Length: 254
Image (cartoon, rainbow, N blue to C red):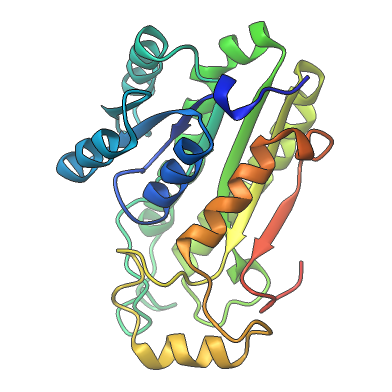
């Protein structure tokens, strides 16, 4: 079973800015109702929801808090309809700054746990909150956000990459369990995007190096990655689940 975009209510976690905002705009452009989830970016999220129109709502929830996520889903259901499409984009506070990263000597389990709590714990909370509606509809789309650092850890962001690796594992196991319910679960793995709040600390020469080594000759944008989220939520991807699609202009191959 598939649903048109106009029939979908989409939650985009961490949608107040950056990649999440680009994803929210993409779904709204295609006619979906959109929940702009935010944790700290209230002004940006509210402004984005107003921009997207009457079928958008900015709803606060820390995705690591299962009770807060349940409240968000309940509010979304009351105002827009039951969400059966989920894009888990939320990221614990992070800056892609190679000079400021945690190195082997300074890395602690707490660094990894903080990232994992949002990446994996947040995904679990969101899926569990949306699952009753997905089961009832016989339809669901879960899209997680990964990284091409799996294949090419050109900068060893240990904590971030380890957490996203765990999220890939959850993506694939959930695809197996939820498939019989009509729910697909897939991951989109971008490279360094130009530009988001997390990548603003990246020096220009790093962007230039990536562009020079990418077949398309440029750095991927949030909007380009957002369009792939539309693919996974569309009827065209109804037979695709458990996959990790790398969207980085061809820099790495999965």
